Length: 455
Image (cartoon, rainbow, N blue to C red; front, side, top):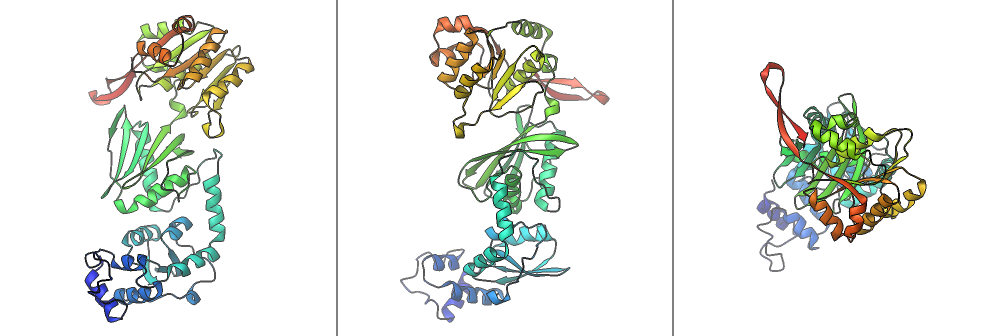
C-alpha cells in the first residue's frame, strides 16, 4: 500500500511539486494513488515520476538499452497478460525472474505473475512508452498468434495449456461441474471476491473452494481464450463456444461474457452429447404421457410445440423427439441457435443473425429442400410463427418451442404474434407443457439422491 504523504514529500523535496500549492488537485493528499492524479493532470512528466517511484521503492530504473534483444519466456504468462499489465521480462535464471514494470505498485499483477512462474521476482521500473515499444519489437509473433486466436471462427477443440494456475483452477471447476451434473457454470467478479456457482437441477449453488480474487482476471481471460473471445474487449458482451475434454468425455461449452460494474461475468453452458436422451424413454416422465406424445408424433403434418419456463427442459424434449422419429424414410432439417447436440442422419443448421441468417430467413429456404419434418429451435417473432404455421398447413410436420409458462398460453402467444385463430386450429396438433420437478431415488447405502424429472 502506498504511503501517499511520503511519496508527496519526496516529490516536493525533488522540486517536482510544492505541497500546499493551490494549483494542485484538492483531493491529492487523500488520494490512494497521488502519482496517477499528477500524471493524468499533466502536473509532472513520466520520466520524473519514474525516478521518484524508483527512489520510493528502492528499485532501479530499467533503460531501453538494458532491454533484452530477444523475448524471454516467463513461464505460463501469456503475451496478453504481460502486455496488458506492462510487465517486460528482462532476465531469468533458475530461481529468479527480473522484470520491468510501468506500475510496480500493482500488487495484483505481481501476485498473478508469481503464481504463473513460481519463482522469485526482481522488480524494476520503466516508462510506459519504452515498454510499449519493446513489446512491439520483441513480441510480434505472439501478437499475431493471439490475434489469430481471437479471430478464429471454427469449432476446433480449444487450445489448452496445463502449467498455469488459471488452467488448473479451470480444470477443477469443469470437473466439479461434470461430476455433479451441472448444466451451467457461473464465474462472476464481485468487488472483493470471485464467485463460482453451478446450476444443478435448476438451482444455483456453490460447491468446493472459491478461487482467490486476485486470480479473477487470469481465470476469466483464460476462459475467453478457450472460447475464442476477444480477451482485450471488456466493455461489450461476447459469445463463444468450444469443445473440451473432461473426465474422458468431449463436452461442448457455450460461453457468454457480459461487463458488470466489478468486472466481467461469465456463464458457461455445458453440453454433454452423451447425456442427450436417445429416445422418449429417456425423458423420465410417466408412461401415460409417453403414450400421448408418441400418438402425437404419428401425425405426418401439422405443428407440435413444447412450452415451459427457462430451464424446464424444452430443448432436451425436442432432441428426444428427433431421436425418436429419426428414420431413413424421413428428411429432417433443424434450425437451431445454437446447435447443442449433433445428430446423425439429420440436417442441422446453425442460425447466425449477424449475417442475416435468422429463423425466418432460413425457414423460407428450408421449405424448398423438400423436408418431411422441420424442427425450429424457438419461435421468437411473428414472421417465424407465420412461416412455421404455413409449413404445417402445407404437408410438413413442424416441431418447435415457445417461451410460455403453460401449454394453454402457447395458443395466446401465437395469436399475439398475429396468427389467425382458425389457422392455429387447423395447424396446431398439440402443445407439450412441461416442468422439471425434484424427485428422490434410493442409492447404495439407503441414501437418497436428488434427481430431476419431467412432468
